[in-house]
Image (tube, helix red, strand yellow):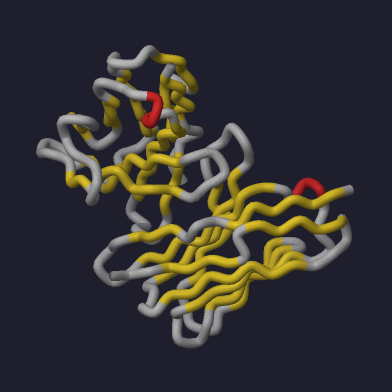
Length: 110
Length: 114
């Protein structure tokens, strides 16, 4: 069974703070995606990482793929209220099966 | 990227009735999926919609309750049959195109069953 764990499940921080969200699996991913979902909308793709050790930056967001392609992290620097939302990681396995993490509900207070 | 139109965006239904949700994509896609999402929670895959053949259902979901059609590469429907309040949820259509590691989502259908 391919199990994808995401943590933390809830995160409430003040504007300006930094945070990291983690996504882990016991199996190797072909690739991993991070999504953000706002109320009333579907998940929107933020980034896809494919290569072990890969780091991608999207403004204040930094995404890292583990060397063994079993884990990933999303780091947000100087969080803003506009970052509030549900963050989801999704791992694509070699059998073309994509699994979603449980999600991290982030609240950034002004 | 793919633009997905999902209808209706929301509905309030009576117990025992059925609702059909439509998903239209602006380009031909290889894979289409239907998910269920409780508010604030992650996604649960209901089934993969296969063109011209029966959908592939995940454990816990059956065709009699969630019949799915996919007549072509750009369109699919999901029906929630004989609804009960436990079916109240957000239903999401999702697709993968040529880049099979990228998946796109519709805005979802918010269903409330009274």
